[in-house]
Image (tube, rainbow, N blue to C red; front, side, top):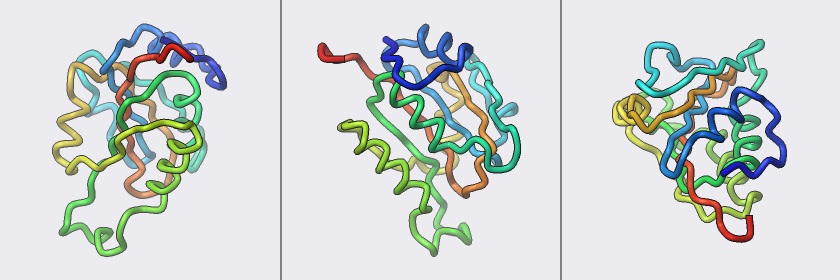
Length: 151
C-alpha cells in the first residue's frame, strides 16, 4: 500500500502501512482536541514541536507521497461561527494545491463541524497526527484509497 517518496516517520509509516482501503487519517491542527476525540482503533502521533511546527499542509504533503488518497475532508465552518463571514480559510486552498500537484482526482469537501467529530470517532480512523498548526479550520480527514497499477 505504501508509495514511499517523502515520508520517513517510522511510527506513521507502520500505521499507514497496516491500514487498508477506506481507512481514515486525521491531520489535526494545534487547536484540535486530539486526545479526547480519538477513535477506538486510532493511534495518536504528536508532531506538535512548537507553535506552527509542523503544519497540517506539511503533514499532508508527506502523506500524499506515501499512500494513495481517495477523499479529503475539512471540518466545515458553521454559519453562526464568526469566521464564516470570511469565506474558506486560506489553508484549504493550500490543500487543494497539494492535491493538484500530486495529480490526484480527489473529492475535497467540508464535513459539517459536528459530523466531522463523529467521522473521526469512527472505527475506520487508524491515525490522528497532532500538529502545531496555528491556522484556523486546518483539520483534515484523509481517506486511504487503492494503489493504481502505475504506482
